[in-house]
Length: 176
Image 1 (cartoon, rainbow, N blue to C red):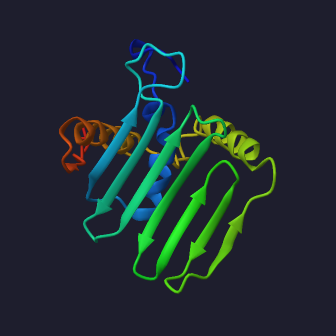
Image 2: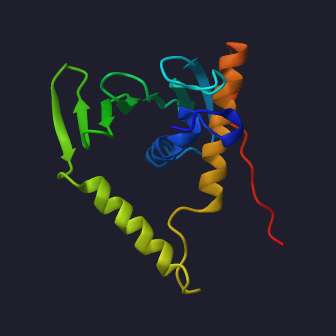
């Protein structure tokens, strides 16, 4: 993790792909950060970058989710939770599992990715980047997706500073 703010460091920016993945799952057309807790300790940083983040969100359809990002725990944690009326989904990005918990308390794993999946995903990302030299190919992750992840980070920081709900401002790129 980058240890200095001027280098763009901090767990929110370093692991923004977790927020992007949650948006993909939730269809983040309208959402708010309902709570954000940040820590700035536990690692040799400049003290200005967050080392742990707990971000709680809700969509306009009242689907709630949370993302826990932790770069300093003895055992690293990267997980997110989606709370729905028919149960809860828990994604553990480090262990490559997705579990579904029913309201009656039963739970089961609905997806478990083989060892090395993160390496394969990285390889697919690089291959896709190379494919984009062909003008017929469109990016799977758009500029707007990246801007939305940054808008969530901005709202999370505002929520942390104010202790209040912060709407995620949707920025729409104007066609030229």
